[in-house]
Image 1 (cartoon, rainbow, N blue to C red):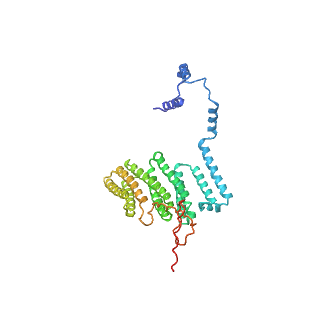
Image 2: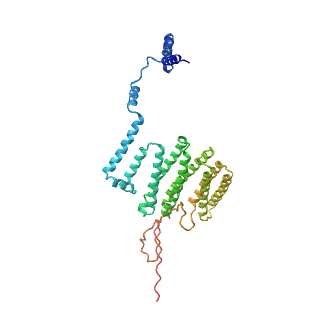
Length: 373
């Protein structure tokens, strides 16, 4: 190929229409057909409404994502401004150590709600819920160590703790669809965190009076439910072949749950109640079946048995109480019936039987015997 031929080829390529545009000859020849097709597919009489036009213009100058980021930045600025004018770092420290019943505690909760509102994504929001659940449980544990006046705040603090646990449960459900690759790690972290929560609740419950035991039991049941849900996610990911949920992790989670159930059964005091005895026997049988299913690697069936064991051991743990002694952990002792005392208005001598409570008038005492001669 000569230089002249190569130059002609380059010139031809340079003169070609870019972007695949049709040649002018073809466009001129088929212009009528093209215009007719456009006319048949377009409503020339339709005009955009004013609202649509304004929304379009607003989206151009104020994008939704940019507006949300600006709102978050403004919220953070207001929080910082409030902290500075409220005393700077000193006031922030006061809010952090505020205890239930104080005005600063309400400010602390308001700041936490603002942090949740300004969370940029679901993962960061879940971490905030975990942090706030830690705060509530730490507050409940400290209140349990104090006197009855401060222990009266425990139910309200545990209600806030339950709300955070519920938010963590909802977040785990959401991540199963939004982040299927990372949900296994989140489930493992959740399961470990719930084990810590159970230990703290158990210790706090041992310090509280019987009247507050039912409230502790509610929180423990909620934590236990989230633990089972986290294990279910791990099993699901293992069966799907995820490397984040290997067999060793699944077996370890099952063994931990079985040990907890066996510890509850062994710590329950002996009882003559036939129903409690039957529940204990069913729990032991379910544990034995779960162990066999785990050895056979039938993890979905084993999970069903673990859920059954959790329900049965919860009943054993919450209803069993030592006969003639202190109530078991989570048990509720009914208060003693109130006695009505009626003042003795009779003129009987000391040691005489008290006047009856009914409306029948008291019988007259027998006459005294005559003195001996």
